[in-house]
Amino acid sequence: MTVGELSVVVHRDAEVLAAAAAARLMVRIVDAQNARGRASIVLTGGGVGIGTLKALNASPARHAIDWAALDIWWGDERFVAPGDPERNELQANEALLDHVPVDPARVHRMPADTGGSPESAAEQYADELAKAARPGADLPRFDVLMLGVGPEGHVASIFPESPAAYDEGLVTAVRNCPKPPPTRVSLTFGTITSADEVWLLAAGEGKAEAVGLALAGAGRVQIPAAGARGGVRTLWLLDEAAAVNVPAELRLRRS
Ligand SMILES: O=C1O[C@H](COP(=O)(O)O)[C@@H](O)[C@H](O)[C@H]1O
Image (tube, rainbow, N blue to C red; front, side, top):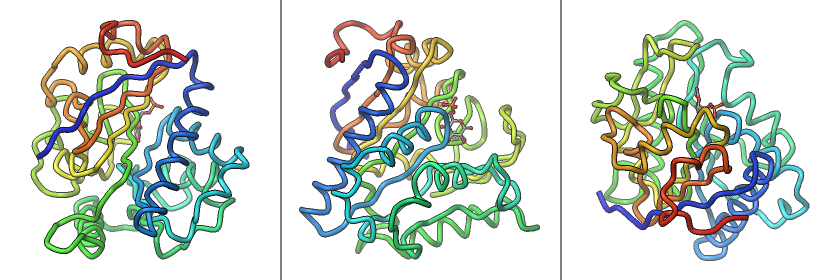
Protein backbone atom coordinates (compact mmCIF):
# COMPACT_ATOMS: atom_id res chain seq x y z
CA MET A 1 0.00 0.00 0.00
CA THR A 2 1.32 3.44 -0.94
CA VAL A 3 0.67 6.16 1.61
CA GLY A 4 0.39 9.68 0.25
CA GLU A 5 0.71 13.04 1.95
CA LEU A 6 -1.50 13.92 4.89
CA SER A 7 -3.16 17.32 5.27
CA VAL A 8 -5.60 18.80 7.74
CA VAL A 9 -7.88 21.69 6.79
CA VAL A 10 -9.97 23.31 9.49
CA HIS A 11 -13.09 25.34 8.70
CA ARG A 12 -15.14 27.61 10.91
CA ASP A 13 -18.16 25.37 11.40
CA ALA A 14 -20.01 22.39 9.95
CA GLU A 15 -21.85 24.46 7.36
CA VAL A 16 -18.69 26.04 5.95
CA LEU A 17 -17.00 22.65 6.10
CA ALA A 18 -19.73 20.99 4.00
CA ALA A 19 -19.74 23.85 1.48
CA ALA A 20 -15.93 23.77 1.17
CA ALA A 21 -15.85 19.97 0.84
CA ALA A 22 -18.50 20.20 -1.91
CA ALA A 23 -16.45 22.81 -3.79
CA ARG A 24 -13.33 20.68 -3.46
CA LEU A 25 -15.19 17.58 -4.64
CA MET A 26 -16.53 19.37 -7.71
CA VAL A 27 -13.05 20.49 -8.72
CA ARG A 28 -11.59 17.05 -8.16
CA ILE A 29 -14.32 15.40 -10.29
CA VAL A 30 -14.02 17.95 -13.10
CA ASP A 31 -10.21 17.62 -13.14
CA ALA A 32 -10.42 13.81 -13.32
CA GLN A 33 -13.01 13.98 -16.09
CA ASN A 34 -10.85 16.42 -18.04
CA ALA A 35 -7.85 14.14 -17.66
CA ARG A 36 -9.48 10.72 -18.25
CA GLY A 37 -13.01 11.35 -19.46
CA ARG A 38 -14.43 9.90 -16.26
CA ALA A 39 -14.24 10.09 -12.49
CA SER A 40 -15.05 7.78 -9.61
CA ILE A 41 -16.04 8.73 -6.08
CA VAL A 42 -17.03 6.87 -2.93
CA LEU A 43 -19.77 8.39 -0.79
CA THR A 44 -20.26 8.29 2.95
CA GLY A 45 -23.27 8.65 5.17
CA GLY A 46 -23.26 10.84 8.27
CA GLY A 47 -23.92 14.49 8.99
CA VAL A 48 -21.09 16.14 7.09
CA GLY A 49 -21.11 13.55 4.30
CA ILE A 50 -24.75 14.17 3.47
CA GLY A 51 -24.32 17.92 4.14
CA THR A 52 -21.58 17.94 1.49
CA LEU A 53 -23.93 16.35 -1.06
CA LYS A 54 -26.63 18.90 -0.21
CA ALA A 55 -24.12 21.73 -0.65
CA LEU A 56 -23.03 20.29 -3.98
CA ASN A 57 -26.65 20.15 -5.13
CA ALA A 58 -27.18 23.77 -4.06
CA SER A 59 -24.21 25.02 -6.09
CA PRO A 60 -24.64 26.23 -9.69
CA ALA A 61 -21.13 24.84 -10.27
CA ARG A 62 -22.61 21.32 -10.13
CA HIS A 63 -23.37 21.82 -13.85
CA ALA A 64 -19.61 21.72 -14.50
CA ILE A 65 -19.68 17.99 -13.70
CA ASP A 66 -20.43 15.46 -16.42
CA TRP A 67 -22.76 13.40 -14.21
CA ALA A 68 -23.12 10.64 -16.80
CA ALA A 69 -19.34 10.07 -16.68
CA LEU A 70 -19.17 9.62 -12.92
CA ASP A 71 -19.02 6.30 -11.10
CA ILE A 72 -20.50 6.46 -7.62
CA TRP A 73 -19.79 3.89 -4.92
CA TRP A 74 -20.48 3.72 -1.18
CA GLY A 75 -18.07 3.18 1.70
CA ASP A 76 -20.69 1.49 3.84
CA GLU A 77 -24.37 0.86 4.06
CA ARG A 78 -26.93 -0.06 6.65
CA PHE A 79 -28.29 -3.55 5.89
CA VAL A 80 -31.95 -2.67 6.31
CA ALA A 81 -34.94 -2.86 3.98
CA PRO A 82 -34.86 -0.89 0.74
CA GLY A 83 -36.50 2.46 1.33
CA ASP A 84 -35.63 2.49 5.05
CA PRO A 85 -34.65 6.10 5.91
CA GLU A 86 -31.54 4.70 7.67
CA ARG A 87 -30.09 3.75 4.27
CA ASN A 88 -27.12 5.94 3.38
CA GLU A 89 -28.07 5.65 -0.30
CA LEU A 90 -31.56 6.99 0.34
CA GLN A 91 -30.13 10.02 2.13
CA ALA A 92 -27.68 10.55 -0.76
CA ASN A 93 -30.55 10.29 -3.26
CA GLU A 94 -32.54 12.93 -1.44
CA ALA A 95 -29.55 15.21 -0.97
CA LEU A 96 -28.16 15.00 -4.51
CA LEU A 97 -28.55 11.98 -6.73
CA ASP A 98 -32.27 12.44 -7.43
CA HIS A 99 -31.51 15.94 -8.72
CA VAL A 100 -28.63 15.39 -11.16
CA PRO A 101 -28.44 13.39 -14.40
CA VAL A 102 -26.35 10.44 -13.18
CA ASP A 103 -26.16 7.26 -15.25
CA PRO A 104 -28.07 4.72 -13.12
CA ALA A 105 -25.75 1.96 -14.34
CA ARG A 106 -22.83 3.83 -12.77
CA VAL A 107 -24.47 4.34 -9.36
CA HIS A 108 -23.24 1.31 -7.44
CA ARG A 109 -25.49 0.95 -4.41
CA MET A 110 -24.75 -1.64 -1.77
CA PRO A 111 -27.49 -4.27 -1.51
CA ALA A 112 -30.34 -3.77 0.95
CA ASP A 113 -31.92 -6.41 3.18
CA THR A 114 -34.40 -8.23 0.98
CA GLY A 115 -34.19 -11.50 2.92
CA GLY A 116 -30.57 -12.46 2.20
CA SER A 117 -27.60 -12.22 4.53
CA PRO A 118 -25.16 -9.32 4.92
CA GLU A 119 -22.41 -11.80 4.02
CA SER A 120 -23.95 -12.45 0.61
CA ALA A 121 -24.53 -8.70 0.18
CA ALA A 122 -20.82 -8.11 0.87
CA GLU A 123 -19.88 -10.77 -1.68
CA GLN A 124 -22.21 -9.24 -4.24
CA TYR A 125 -20.63 -5.80 -3.78
CA ALA A 126 -17.12 -7.28 -4.00
CA ASP A 127 -18.14 -8.85 -7.32
CA GLU A 128 -19.45 -5.51 -8.56
CA LEU A 129 -16.17 -3.85 -7.61
CA ALA A 130 -14.18 -6.62 -9.30
CA LYS A 131 -16.20 -6.22 -12.52
CA ALA A 132 -15.25 -2.54 -12.62
CA ALA A 133 -11.61 -3.20 -11.69
CA ARG A 134 -8.71 -1.62 -13.50
CA PRO A 135 -6.78 -4.07 -15.72
CA GLY A 136 -4.61 -6.26 -13.52
CA ALA A 137 -6.23 -5.03 -10.28
CA ASP A 138 -8.97 -6.23 -7.92
CA LEU A 139 -10.59 -2.84 -7.64
CA PRO A 140 -11.64 0.13 -9.74
CA ARG A 141 -9.83 3.42 -9.42
CA PHE A 142 -11.35 5.71 -6.78
CA ASP A 143 -10.42 9.36 -7.28
CA VAL A 144 -11.91 10.42 -3.96
CA LEU A 145 -13.22 8.25 -1.14
CA MET A 146 -15.06 10.18 1.56
CA LEU A 147 -15.55 8.95 5.11
CA GLY A 148 -17.39 10.28 8.13
CA VAL A 149 -15.70 9.72 11.48
CA GLY A 150 -17.65 8.38 14.45
CA PRO A 151 -17.14 9.68 18.00
CA GLU A 152 -15.34 6.43 18.84
CA GLY A 153 -13.23 6.65 15.67
CA HIS A 154 -15.17 4.40 13.28
CA VAL A 155 -14.97 4.95 9.55
CA ALA A 156 -17.35 3.39 7.02
CA SER A 157 -18.74 0.59 9.23
CA ILE A 158 -15.38 -0.46 10.65
CA PHE A 159 -15.78 0.01 14.40
CA PRO A 160 -12.98 -0.16 16.99
CA GLU A 161 -11.84 -3.67 17.88
CA SER A 162 -14.44 -5.23 15.55
CA PRO A 163 -13.90 -8.18 13.19
CA ALA A 164 -14.26 -5.80 10.23
CA ALA A 165 -11.00 -4.17 11.29
CA TYR A 166 -9.20 -7.45 10.55
CA ASP A 167 -11.03 -8.47 7.38
CA GLU A 168 -8.63 -8.91 4.47
CA GLY A 169 -11.32 -9.16 1.79
CA LEU A 170 -12.66 -6.27 -0.28
CA VAL A 171 -16.03 -5.86 1.42
CA THR A 172 -17.15 -7.09 4.81
CA ALA A 173 -20.42 -7.95 6.53
CA VAL A 174 -20.84 -6.24 9.90
CA ARG A 175 -22.99 -7.74 12.63
CA ASN A 176 -23.60 -6.50 16.18
CA CYS A 177 -22.50 -3.01 15.28
CA PRO A 178 -22.46 -0.82 18.44
CA LYS A 179 -24.22 2.01 16.55
CA PRO A 180 -27.68 1.15 15.25
CA PRO A 181 -28.69 -0.33 12.90
CA PRO A 182 -26.61 -3.33 14.00
CA THR A 183 -26.20 -5.03 10.62
CA ARG A 184 -24.20 -3.36 7.88
CA VAL A 185 -21.95 -3.83 4.88
CA SER A 186 -18.63 -2.00 4.66
CA LEU A 187 -15.56 -1.60 2.53
CA THR A 188 -12.47 -2.95 4.30
CA PHE A 189 -9.22 -1.15 5.03
CA GLY A 190 -7.68 -2.81 1.95
CA THR A 191 -10.32 -1.30 -0.31
CA ILE A 192 -10.36 2.09 1.42
CA THR A 193 -6.60 2.47 1.18
CA SER A 194 -6.66 1.68 -2.55
CA ALA A 195 -8.23 5.10 -3.21
CA ASP A 196 -6.10 7.91 -4.61
CA GLU A 197 -7.51 10.39 -2.12
CA VAL A 198 -9.21 9.62 1.20
CA TRP A 199 -11.09 12.51 2.78
CA LEU A 200 -12.13 12.25 6.42
CA LEU A 201 -14.99 14.60 7.29
CA ALA A 202 -15.79 15.45 10.90
CA ALA A 203 -17.58 18.23 12.71
CA GLY A 204 -18.47 18.90 16.32
CA GLU A 205 -16.81 18.48 19.69
CA GLY A 206 -18.04 14.89 19.91
CA LYS A 207 -15.48 13.95 17.25
CA ALA A 208 -12.52 15.78 18.77
CA GLU A 209 -11.13 12.92 20.85
CA ALA A 210 -11.21 10.40 17.99
CA VAL A 211 -9.71 12.90 15.53
CA GLY A 212 -6.92 13.77 17.98
CA LEU A 213 -6.09 10.11 18.64
CA ALA A 214 -6.13 9.19 14.95
CA LEU A 215 -3.74 12.02 14.11
CA ALA A 216 -1.53 11.24 17.10
CA GLY A 217 -0.73 7.82 15.66
CA ALA A 218 -3.32 5.48 17.22
CA GLY A 219 -3.57 1.97 15.78
CA ARG A 220 -6.29 1.33 13.22
CA VAL A 221 -7.90 -1.47 15.19
CA GLN A 222 -8.37 0.87 18.17
CA ILE A 223 -9.22 3.97 16.12
CA PRO A 224 -10.20 2.91 12.58
CA ALA A 225 -9.96 6.48 11.28
CA ALA A 226 -6.19 6.17 11.80
CA GLY A 227 -6.06 3.47 9.13
CA ALA A 228 -7.91 5.39 6.44
CA ARG A 229 -5.13 6.62 4.17
CA GLY A 230 -5.14 7.47 0.48
CA GLY A 231 -2.42 6.38 -1.94
CA VAL A 232 -1.87 9.94 -3.15
CA ARG A 233 -3.39 12.02 -0.39
CA THR A 234 -5.20 11.81 2.92
CA LEU A 235 -7.19 14.91 3.71
CA TRP A 236 -8.82 15.61 7.03
CA LEU A 237 -11.60 18.17 6.59
CA LEU A 238 -12.70 19.38 10.00
CA ASP A 239 -14.53 22.16 11.75
CA GLU A 240 -12.96 24.03 14.65
CA ALA A 241 -14.80 22.00 17.29
CA ALA A 242 -13.61 18.65 15.89
CA ALA A 243 -10.07 20.00 15.50
CA VAL A 244 -9.35 21.11 19.06
CA ASN A 245 -6.90 18.24 19.62
CA VAL A 246 -5.11 18.57 16.28
CA PRO A 247 -1.51 19.67 16.73
CA ALA A 248 -1.00 23.16 15.27
CA GLU A 249 1.81 21.94 13.00
CA LEU A 250 -0.59 19.58 11.19
CA ARG A 251 -3.10 22.25 10.26
CA LEU A 252 -2.75 23.37 6.66
CA ARG A 253 -4.75 26.56 7.04
CA ARG A 254 -7.89 27.95 8.55
CA SER A 255 -10.86 29.35 6.72
O1 LIG B 1 -23.06 5.04 10.78
C1 LIG B 1 -22.41 5.80 10.12
O2 LIG B 1 -21.77 6.87 10.74
C2 LIG B 1 -20.73 7.56 10.13
C3 LIG B 1 -20.55 8.94 10.79
O3 LIG B 1 -21.78 9.60 10.99
P1 LIG B 1 -21.88 11.01 11.73
O4 LIG B 1 -23.31 11.45 11.57
O5 LIG B 1 -21.49 10.82 13.15
O6 LIG B 1 -20.94 11.93 11.01
C4 LIG B 1 -20.85 7.58 8.65
O7 LIG B 1 -19.69 8.05 8.13
C5 LIG B 1 -21.13 6.20 8.10
O8 LIG B 1 -21.17 6.22 6.68
C6 LIG B 1 -22.39 5.71 8.65
O9 LIG B 1 -22.89 4.49 8.15
